[in-house]
Image (cartoon, rainbow, N blue to C red; front, top):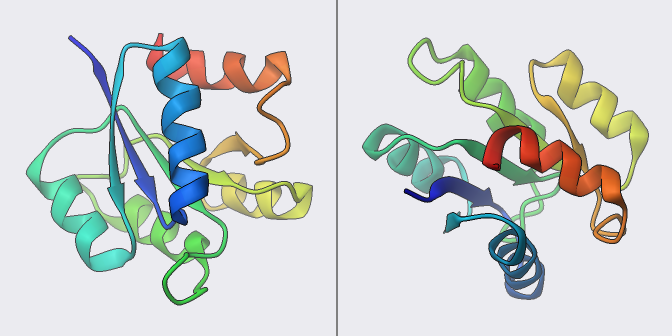
Length: 123
């Protein structure tokens, strides 16, 4: 049975790249959302093995860290692993401090560490 990934706040090219990267390495289904409303609808409807959130959401450029914080504050969702997608180490640090898992940046697809980080949840 495939693992489930929720991809939040990515523009079309970035979502396509993430989906292609994940599906070429893991047995996964990738669902796309854009903001807090549709993200929480999906999270309440079905279980996800990993949530990937863009640091700046595509539709309104709001801070993806706020969605991570909301997920971690929700008793029913808090155990869901969440990564922020960003190239900036300081934003990765902020995500970990808020209860997330250290994620990866869009310039890191070719690094073996990226696949290793994801394999922890998707292999």
